[in-house]
Image (cartoon, rainbow, N blue to C red; front, side, top):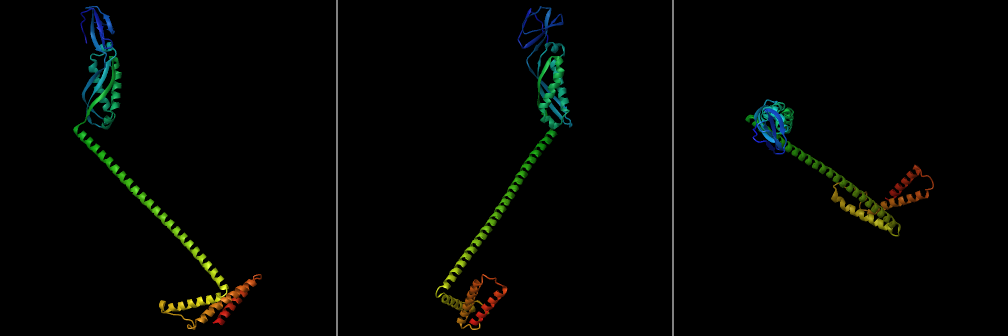
Length: 326
């Protein structure tokens, strides 16, 4: 930007504007911020540059990805001038040069990646564009601050395919979640059945153990009761009149047994003289007395050795006494 200076002094806004002065058409100096003196008609301000950061719109352009998809891309480039001399004499139009460099750099970067990466790696694209522009614009006195992709437009068919792909991906995730939920449900049901079976088997085992313990205790109680009854019966027989009581009890059982014979079976086994219960009672008492004598004999001969012959002799004596009682 060039301007004629009709006055002998020129003031610049501090930190905002940089002015390039030419003397007789040749570069002379760059005015520093503040009050500056120049010679009228000899010195003239050839270029005026703003030192503020500016946003440069990058027009919409066509780029082709590595998988041969055509895209429409535009963006915004943020730059500022850091060297007024280079910005004035290093390039004819710094803004136009920067804009063209940004377009070509973006097309080059897009061609290196696929369509999916273009949408995923915007930040990487922006950094690569800034780095390449910064290397080229240094000689122009321009600093590239940052670049932002504003919009990416894909062809209609590509957009439809991308929408279908996204829908398929959503359905896939939904199916995966449904299958995982069903799997967890079946696992929980199977685990519940397993625990129920384990608990049922443990309960059955404990029930059997308790039943066995109860039966064992019942057997012990019955055995104790039987032993006590036998002991009392033996004691009752030894007292006066005990044998008569035993004979009476046997007679009662004898008559009670004969009263049930005809009711319980059609086949009846009777003794030789069923009408004479006294013979049956006498035989039973004879067996009892023979056992008492045998026990006394064994007690008397406990000091000597009891041989099988002695045991057989005792057995024969008991049988003989029984026959005589009959």
